[in-house]
Amino acid sequence: MFRFLLVGALALGLAGCASTRGPQATDTQIAAVSYRDPGPATLTLYTMINNRTGSGGHTSLMINARERIIFDPAGSFRADIVPERNDVLYGITPAVEQAYRASHARSTHHVVVQEIEVTPQQAEMAYQLAKQMGPVPGAFCASATSQLLQQVPGFAGIKSGFQPTDLSDQFEQMPGVKTERYYEDDDADLQKGLAENNAKLNAQAAAGG
Image 1 (tube, rainbow, N blue to C red):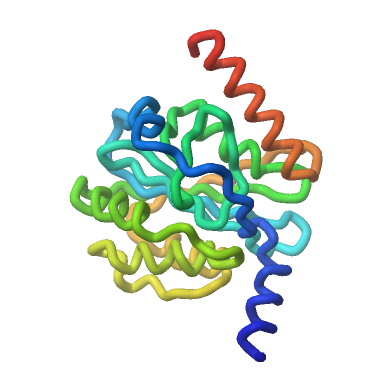
Image 2 (image 1 turned 90 degrees about the vertical axis):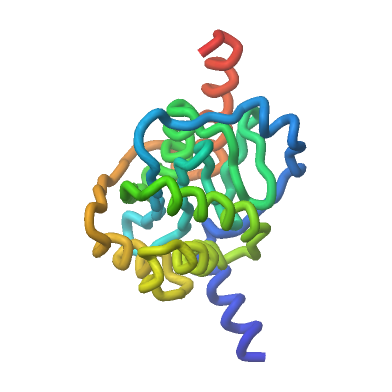
């Protein structure tokens, strides 16, 4: 009984970690959009923060390995040009990455973006783990992300937990982490932000951008 109460409380407190899953992408769809950022191998932790309470609403992890993906456990982000399979988003070009953070940043929330450079081997391990982790139940976004990181050499000291801000605080202590905070003053409705950024991505794709 306590377990069900706990999960219920977490679901209310972490509304951003409430997946509404779409269709699973095929290998062909994923291969068609594969993109790798030309920079070094990196891990980028996203934490969506409530501007009023300071609490964390969602956690996700962008991985720049053989290709750039976002592990978005129980996430809400959907875009027509971004294939998804088991909570992994593919084809994370600069435009898609901007749409991802812009969809989550609004009048009620901002996004903490924490990037750390890693070895290609570390990035590859995180990449493989991300594809094996999902799909993740609602409210388990921080837990799943911390469990992934624990298995990457150099990140074994990360402690598991359900609070996105706790994971962000731990990640901040890693040597070499670069942190920025991304704000927008859009409508508080997450779905409106998702729809607007989906439309922008579609327009860019139609224009060949």
